[in-house]
Length: 267
Ligand SMILES: [Mg+2]
Image: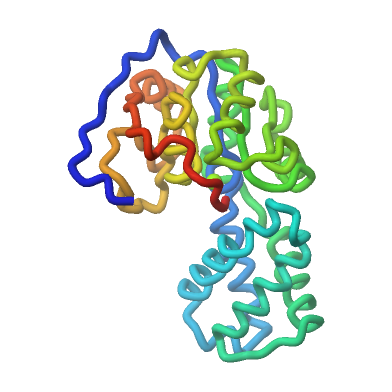
């Protein structure tokens, strides 16, 4: 994004954190490694997928997912149509032209294997339960309502969530400030009394900062920091007594005006 030598203005929050907002995909629910395990499984049944190393294919799949996701969020494609298109493009990248029905069949096989392999991000379920004992916990997520509700039930944390704010239901997606404002209203706290934990720099970190929420960047794959913005970072979840002090100490830098309200992007 090119922040150059921008020096942040640090705001002093008016008080301690009183509510926690948290992302779902790749923060609580382990989409990335479930996806990798499912790709490894379908790769064993489709020789053309073995023309590329697993990790390369997995990264390519993530890229295709992000490429198509805006069409799902806007309602132009259903989840099933998007999955078919994604596998058609992925097969093409392996030199294989799949008909729509063959791509659909492959996407359904992938989907079955994905569902069989679903898991939580290590430590996330325990963290949500611990946080829920002390704070209102609001999940803020970009996706379809039914799918996200089902994930929370599957993980067994639906009873530890005070509210679920999903882009499909509210009509705007992270990092649009409006979805965070709705989440704050559900939590019943002003922006500077909330913390937002999430893995996406664009959607969760910049999105939260855009409305004055303290972000905590969940960076489990140890990616380089995209911008030199001094926000709190955590690379793995542990007991709440390790995470809670981090929430309280999380800095709240003010973004330059150009960063406020960035255009909606993918998951
Ligand atoms: Mg995420």
